[in-house]
Length: 191
Image (cartoon, rainbow, N blue to C red; front, side, top):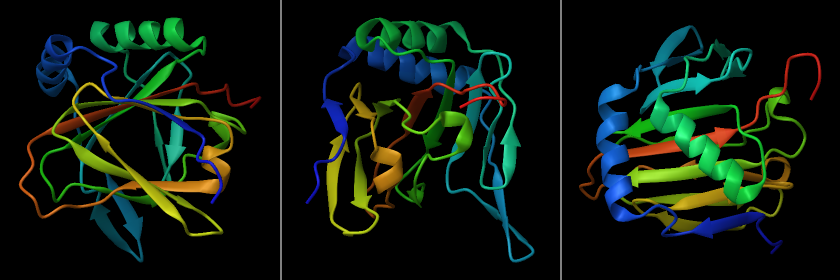
């Protein structure tokens, strides 16, 4: 099996900061339930979403373009922290709210052109623990990580070219989980 191009930090944010962020982001972010249009039907995504970023960081996926809202101070502070710790620029964040074990994200890659050929995506988890899985596109081998409150998982290098990832549903009772995926969006004219 190929090495998976990720870095995992199970205790990236301290507990009190993670607690404060979970509460603040749950109440302050402009959560919406977006839909995917397939076969003439509108199918709601099984989670809530919010897109924040600098001006000009529109993001297109699942046939829809998302225009950024201005990042609230908590998101801006996390962008600055990640940039300081990893030396990578971040100008946008996709927030996902998983309200319970029925909320999920299906297998996919973050391979949209505006992310460039080898995106560096920093994913912070807050709240309930959920399993994150990655599966090689051709070998179909997979690996999972339990993303805890305050953890950070980074996908880098060829992670989006060669691997898919997901958050599967679970029948276990789980509370709210907020996931923040920080990324750099290239201007439309150049990747």
